[in-house]
Structures are given as structure tokens and as C-alpha cells.
Image 1 (cartoon, rainbow, N blue to C red):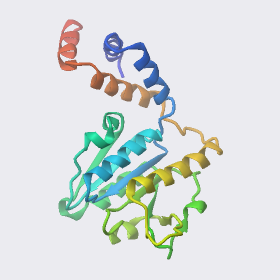
Image 2 (image 1 turned 90 degrees about the vertical axis):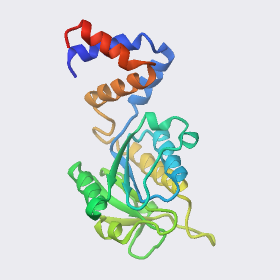
Image 3 (image 1 turned 90 degrees about the horizontal axis):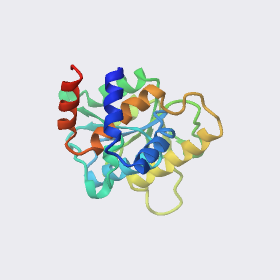
Image 4 (image 1 turned 45 degrees about the vertical axis):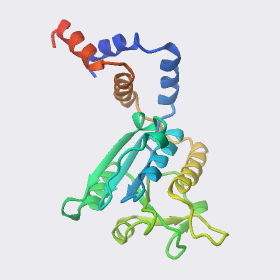
Length: 229
């Protein structure tokens, strides 16, 4: 980020309350990309939105959405504003490549990819899930779970042990349980670079400031015209 951009953010900060700025800095200090969530072909948008809200609550910055037959639209009544704080990465299914494109991008960033499944065959329990490696958790849709393609392309399968008649939790509850477990274990490991870097904080701060200030495009145009950009 160049000095002029920093000057502009400092200018925008004058339109944001001190309380809000302090809260953003506190949140930024706990933001992580060490764990991430993948949603594959979610049928009910409110379930995906609930996972978005869960991710923000746990400090997870990125959500990856694989769109096949079903596209995802944010439900603001469920997210309660969480969508403005997290980054959503969408993969559309041109030439049936959405899963492959998503997994390729994740592996390029060093993630192991674990598909969640209610089936215990060929999968390990959440209690055996280690937190010492960057991890992407894949959740499938409400009817079929993670697709066969997703299961075959993943690095492994993981499940939550169930003790009742119902086969599985809904997606947002499952995501909450998995993320809570991973974050608890990660907190005991003192993992280097677990939280986002200062450069990443600057990028998010810029995005968040712009999202908060009304008529930001007018401010931006006026500021940069005065400062020679």
C-alpha cells in the first residue's frame, strides 16, 4: 500500500468513531487465514449465510463457495452484517471445473483439504483432527453432502461422532463444532504466522473503512483529484 492510499485511509478514519476503529483493530489482531471453509453447492442460501456468520465469529477471514446447480446469494437477515467483514471466493462450474479450480487454489496456498462426512468409513474423528497444518474444511449441501468428486479430490475425510438417531448436524452447527475444535487445538500450539500479516491487515482495513463510510466514492474522487492521482 502506497503512502497516498494510507493518507486516504487516515482521511476516512475521521468519519469513523473511535469505538468502531478500536473494535476493528481488535478484530484484525485475531483474524486468521490458517483455517478456511469451503461450501459446495449449498441448496439453501440461509444455511450458507449462517456459516458466513459463524466464520466471522471465529475470526476466519475467507469463505470459498463452489457453485454448481446452486448459486449463493447473501441473506442479510442471517449474516447480520458478517458478509462485509469476510472475503467470499466463488468458483463457478464452467466446464465442470469448480471443484478442481477451488482445490487447486487452496493447495497453492498450502492448505490440506478435508471433506466433512457423516459416514465413519474411511474417515477419522474430529477428536483426531490435528491443528498443526493449514486446513480447509469442505461442507456439502443439505441433501447429498460433499460430492463424490469433492471426496475423491480431498486429502482426507473427517466426521463428528454421532450418538442419536439423526445422521448429522446442519451445516452451520457442523462448521461451528469443527472450527471451535481446530481453534482450541491451535491455541495450544502457538503456531507462527497463525494470524494475518500487517500487510493483510492494511488491505482489510482499507476494505472495511470504505465499506463503513457513506458516499465513499465521492470522498475518494475528491481526495485523489486534490492529491494528483
